[in-house]
Each structure stands twice: as structure tokens, then as C-alpha cells.
Image (cartoon, rainbow over all chains, first blue to last red; front, side, top):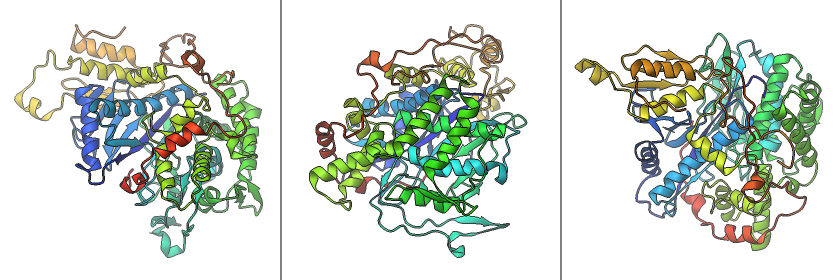
Length: 502
Length: 73
């Protein structure tokens, strides 16, 4: 894709298969993290306080330059910086592989499962799957400039949604009204959808704002926090938290590919106009809830148009301007067109490519076979099992085994992506650093005072900078550069005999 | 990928130094078909059901109740 860095952060749910668990889910996630860093030695654990809720030892960077850490009691995996859709798919699945292998090695497959979803049907809890897209600082990050992106994001769920049984209750939250921040309920926002059998998105019920800076309890269609994790004079990071955790590789690739192209349309001034949605938050939920799947959208102009028609307008603009741009762009354009065409027919045509369609087909198959209604509690359990990371349990993997899922990567590339960073982004330099530290070479030749030994950690690593004790900081402000030569030179100044990777 | 071009390029297998040096052509990964069972677009209509139903019937009906998660982020 053209001048784009992609990244994905996924929070996993942990299911304990016991009536009276010996330990809490939190105990298990701590043990899994410790196994990954201290037994498998897949990365280096943070030794410094990264933030308010990230004390030393909370997580760390991996040899693939991604991160595993604990966030609000959930295991979370962040991919390394990826410059292609192929890499972001492989890197994302590499996180699943690392976590499931830890469960396998600990012999816990009968005790716990990691569930890559975004909701708890019973508690109403939600947890995220956040997308990151690097854009230039010149990107029109204003309400007017972002209006086409809002329209695209609200309607893209028709092919990116993971689907769920039921709905969440009314979400309490703070919303911005002009210059005031007030409780949502005070201004009459939010509605109870009642008991829905099935909806196409997991996160739609939990998105309560169009634009907002905060995250917890105030999830917005577009998160406005300005944290580029790169040179702020050159770059901005578009951080999206409305998406579902996709299980289908196809859905992950199409989600990133289409969103990347829409960002490019906005950057280039080619985004379709006149498609501003009257109430984007309410529309997001209405589309997800629509049992007839007509997906009608009320525009600010007063017109009503379907989500498929809106997506086709974005597709037409992208076809006009970006056909032939590169192989991945052509793949996205072709599959986007095919999926939109198929969405006009029966959802069974999308099984294997679109997660909500796969899940709905599985649930309908079960209901028909067992003659149960949508209120049968088993359906919620099946909903979870679609997202189980264990390949012998996961319903999605069941579809793979039946040969009904188009694969976009291979198991061997996923295995490689679990150990190694993409070789054309900043991740390569960071991955080299992590391997260097795991080799135990960082303390060689240090001449430290007792105070330095006690209070200065041997290394501090962040996305855009690292520092080794006794050495100046090493900034990496450009995610498009690998920095690998400079990183190796930095090591060589510290240690002449570290065995560098070829 | 159903015979289409596009996502076959992986960046893990070569080492271009973007903005610092020449970019080598990337070898394509082995196609999924070389790993057994090529990708197939789902056909219109229902996939095979028997094996999937067996898998679904093994699911613990109480697991949604046991799945006690906190809100994250």
C-alpha cells in the first residue's frame, strides 16, 4: 500500500473452564506473560515504569518488535509496524500463535482458552481491537476533513463486523456538547435495543461518541488523541477503536486495505462528498442491529441511502484514482467490489470471508439442527467459540478444515512473523535490539556506580526510541526507516563481540 | 487468493533498507495450496455441516456464563 504504516492492538479475553476456578483470570494472564518472557524468552520485559498502569514487569517487546503486556487485566498484543497488508495479517496471527503456544506448553488447554473477541455477553464488558494508520502531519484532521472517514467507518462494518448474539444495554458515557462535557443520559442519548437475536458488530453498542480523546467509557468513532509515536512534525497516527477483532484473514486484510485507501482519498482530496451522516453514533448501532440487513443511512442532506451504496461510492473513487497503484491496492479494489456485490445477496456467499456472515451461518446451522431458539444460552457459548485461539476448538478453524476459508498467508509465514520483525520498517531495528538484549550483551563493558546499578534500568525501549544504560538515547522517529545499520553500529560501540544477525 | 495477485508479497523474507538503499524484489511466499488444501472462495450455498455440527456440539454450554471479563482498554 502507498506510504502507509499499519499496526493492530488486540486485547484477548481469557475463559477459565472450571465451575470453581482455582485461580482468577488475572492469575492466569500473569503466568502466561511470565512464561512468554522468562521461559520462552520471546522478548525482553520492561524494567521501567512505562506509565500509570504499566509498572516494571508489566510487559515488553518481542523479537518480532511487537509487544505483549497486560492492560486492564487483559493480555494485549500489539503488532510491529507493518508496511503491507500481508505483513499486518501475518503479524496479527503471529500474536495469536505466541499466546496459544504458551497455553500449549503450560499444558493448560483443558483449563483455559484465549478468546479473541470484544464482548462478554453476561457482564456487558467490552475490550478492544485498535487499528493504527500512519498519515502525514498535513492530513486534514478536522471535523470537516474527517467527515468522509466517519461515513466510511460507520458503514464498513457490513464487511468488517465480527457479529454477536444479543446486544449490550444502554452505555453510560460522557459526551461533548459544544464546549461542555456532559453525561450522555442527561441529553437523552442512547437507546436500549431490547433483545436482539444477532447483530453484525461487536463494538457498535459500545461506541458513544463521534470524536473524543478519551478511551474508556467514552469510545469514539475517531479517537482524537495526538500521539504519533513518531516525529510529530512529520506524522500523525490515526487511532481507531471502533473495529471488531477479526478472525478471518480476509476480513483483516480488507479492513486495513479499504481504510488505508479511504485515508489516501482524503489526503488527495478525492473522497466522495455529500455523504455526511445525520447521527453517526446512532447510525452505527442501527446498521449493526438491522435484522433485515437493509442498512439504511440518513444523511445530513435529508436523503436516505444504503450502507452498500455508500461503500460503492468510496470504491468508485478509489477505482478511478488508484487502480494499478500496486499489487495490494489492486487486490483490495477487486475484493472490495466482490464483497459489496455479494452483500446484496445471501450472507451464506460470504462465509469464510466476512466474520459476521460465517458466525451467523454457523449459529443458524446449529439452531436448525438442534431446534433451539435464539434465546438458547448455548448460542452465546458458540459465539465465543468462534473466536477461540485453539485450532481444534475454534469454529472458524472448523471452517478452515472444511476448506471453506480463503487463506491470505501461510502457517510458515505466521511462524516466521512470531520470531522476526518485518524487514522494511522501524520494527527491524527494534527487533535487532531485542535479540541483542536477549543475548545478554548489554551489560558488557559497563562501568557503573552503585547508584546507577540500583536506579538506572539497563534498557528502556519504546516505539520510537530506546536507551541503553550508559549510552545516549537512540531515537527512531521515522517508522519507514529500518535504522538497522545505525542500531548495529550502536551495539558495536558498546560491544565488539556481539554476534549480529546476518 | 483465488489466483489473484495482491497479498502474496511478504516483507519478512528480504531486507530492503527503505530510504537508505535499493529495494530488492520480494520472493513470493509459498501459496497456501503448497501447504495442503488451496484457498477456495466459499461457494454460494451452505458449507458442509456435519463436522462443524460435531465441533459445535462439543462446546461447553455454560462457557458464556463462565467468561467473566472486565472492560478493557
